[in-house]
Image (cartoon, rainbow, N blue to C red):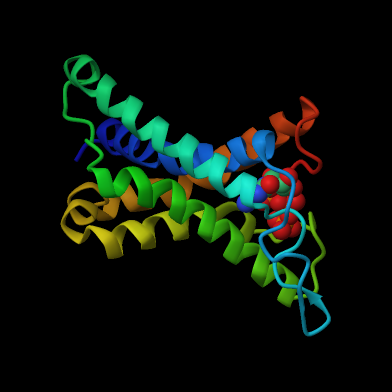
Length: 181
Ligand code: CTP
Ligand code: MG
């Protein structure tokens, strides 16, 4: 497969998993998912993982997937190949899996002595990708395998950290995100 279709497919398929984090930054807050509970002297997840962030992020990502489905017929002739269609299960697993992966990353950060907002290079940039891909692979294996071919997966793993760092620095500069990571 040529490079452009691989990159476009990777970005298109992951957009519903990318946006939830940013939407949670803007729309999150309120009651933490762990309810303030601690485990071995540290917060289970921390104040940065809230119910509102989870709901806003998941719902927002699902809206993105539905919007991409609507745009698909007009985009396909422009790019010259078929961009992926999100089946109902993927509309949910991509954003919800991303939020779960992000929460799992926070769980790991707390277990390794990192306080809320502390950087954890690698985990910060890829936890939500791992969550989105895993949830989708488990829920709808045939669709997952048809879209996330080895070259597309490689593109996702290479492009996501750069995109993630870029949008977080932007969010920090705009004053909506505390830390630039
Ligand atoms: N957020 C939220 N609910 C979520 C995920 C994120 O409310 N489920 C919001 C929080 O305001 C959080 C911000 O988005 O502070 C940035 O998310 P992230 O960088 O993942 O959290 P951190 O505050 O850095 O905390 P952690 O160290 O646990 O990653
Ligand atoms: Mg963070």
